[in-house]
Amino acid sequence: MNELIFYYPEKHEQHFVRDHPERPERVEVLRDRLDQAGLWQPEILVPPAVIEDSVLRAIHTADHLDRVRRASQSGRMVDGDTYTTPYSWQLAQNTAGGAISVAEQVFTRQAKRGFALTRPPGHHATPNQAMGFCLLNNIALAAEHLLQVQGAERVAIVDIDLHHGNGTQEIFYQRPDVFFCSIHQYPLFPMSGLANETGSGEGKGSTLNIPFPPYAGDQARQAVLDRLLLPLLEDFQPEMILVSAGFDAHWRDPLGHQVATVDGYASIVAQLAQFADQVCGGRIALLLEGGYDLEAGAACGVAVSQALAGQSWTDELGPSPFPEDDYWESRLEQVLKVWDRI
Ligand SMILES: [Zn+2]
Image (cartoon, rainbow, N blue to C red; front, side, top):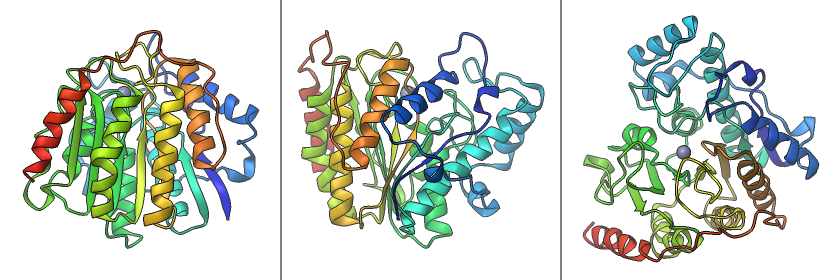
């Protein structure tokens, strides 16, 4: 069994517009650093799966798929900040297929752990709308594949990107078979993910949102794991954990004001991997979401890969020059109050 597999989106450099933060270098710099760290060999790269039509239709509407395909044909923007090029539709399908491949190989124990370098990212894509640089919701398609095709009954998604994973939330909001947790800065795009958004109908109690104020960092995120996330995952008993791994909560990132570190990111992933060892046969895989400072994205990407592989990591970028503000504690108390009532 391979210890750590990766998916790499071939020809992704063709999905590109000038001066946009979601640029090909994000993946290229990360790949170079993974290579330098000895984690990147041809035999651990998985090809993208073809997405089953029933899986695609369970996550996205026919209108949405049609709109993205047609926008890509002419290389149009789908909204003010979400672009396509003539290759984007093919790349979006490939990259979601890559996420599915990684998830499937880890779920079926052909690989111990995996990391899909998904580009474009996916967690803002709703059933019916491309937004926030996202065209197809890669992690939702991977989770649905595990449930629908691989026979899983419960999958957990943990979103540690700077931004709320609104698309993933909307897709699974009424479903009890996917536990979704998002830790994010609020207020910030996409302006959702409040503490009282906890799921509805049969999905009540299957969505956990932690909206942190600016200048929350590693301590704040660790407190979420200790006080809410790991206990709730313990109750949920997932058969696999998928992580929306966006690195834009790092203190160097230009899009937000969280002050997480490389060390903090790796520590969260190491703890989730350890939890997976105890609860779901070690089944955990990461999918790349945001992260717009090239150095921070690459350093976090290498460190979380080392954490997944059970190796030690180093934080060459160090702690934030801006101190962590303890205002996050009152926000977390508010979340705990909401969950006391569920
Ligand atoms: Zn983000």
